[in-house]
Image (tube, rainbow, N blue to C red; front, side, top):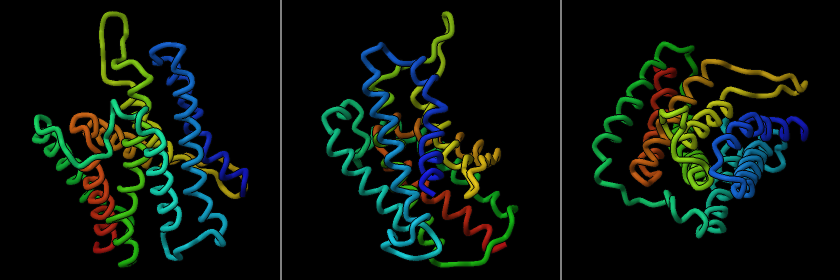
Length: 243
């Protein structure tokens, strides 16, 4: 089980490491990229330990409450320790950039509306605990880590645009976080150490992860991504329960 946890925690970020180096501002950013990798792996390990070792569970239930609490605690501690480094991109705040508020609310509303299509997914039994979990934990935990810390680190050490010849495209940090978010939800390893990849969850969460990262950069805050993330998860789950 230890090997399973280590592989699931390390493989997604290691897959993206070559791309990350390609877009680094210069060679001096290697330490920041290394910090990015280390934080991600430690975070994933903390999330997964309560799932594999029940003795670490503080809260028992149908969802990984303990892992999420570990993740939130680790995220906040990391933020405090790296506060000065992350200061150029301090997204852990409630204040929004008013100039971007209208367009980001519009985009997040469209993203939330797509959650209603989950009504056509496989039905699951109604459960209050699962609904409460989806309405609270994933958005807080994942937005603090993915958008509040990991995205901020990449914005610090990577180029601000993807440049191909004379043309420029979107931000590489936003793209990498989107793909990493997708890999976390689409890639897994079985107890027999077989690698498993689910294409649809990967695509959906990569796209939503990219959009939530873009919203974070535009608003300079993870508040709207947290609210959007939790609402999406809640609606998706509710739709599958009431069909």
